[in-house]
Length: 308
Image (cartoon, rainbow, N blue to C red; front, top):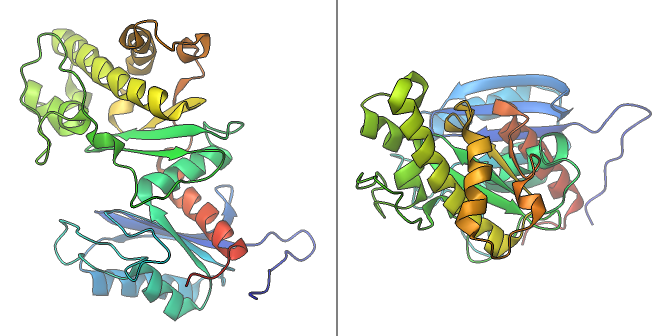
């Protein structure tokens, strides 16, 4: 049986966190976002040099009791699967079939927790951010792409794979003839409401919009996100939906999403809570959500049985 490491005196257990993103990897050692004793940001290049820099960081940092990895995907999360811990069919050149968990475990000889980057952000928001106090919620990130992760009764569900709620179907909003930006589905939620879709419609990114373009962008964005949240409400019954990412920072967007959600539900299954200000809320941790969630993955890995 793996020994459980306890804190000594008032010194907290410190964990390692790795948020592996498509453009950068954030590594840290700490016990919470307010207790980080070492951190670094590494540009995501080829797997060999990137992971070498990750391991070099941990070699020079205080030793963690366990490490959590929150990674871009797709990834294999089934612990019994021979490819567990790997990035699988990634479109990022060179990263297909890269064994993240095996590489880190072999080098550091500590338990390693593993999940997607959006699931990591969800755990971070649940522990320290905008989802504190609830145990069933959805974290939705709206930026260059759209991703979402559900935490159900405090757990990240894993079936055959991780959820891809950014690619659910949404009805087209009135007056919007944009064909959609998703290379796989065209007009799915990501294809219609991701940052590139906004920029393609108006010829400039969301943060540069003003006047009538901004008003129209907000109407369409709120409509698509409300339809996406409606599906999440009907299928998962969350107590809260936390929204992060650059597009979520558009002024006035989230109150409009709350309003449009009521319209989208059409009175069926709608509760007073769904229109409350604390139902669809902005993320609280910003860019620290993913790295913080990786610390939670590490904590859970320390307490879990070893992977097969």
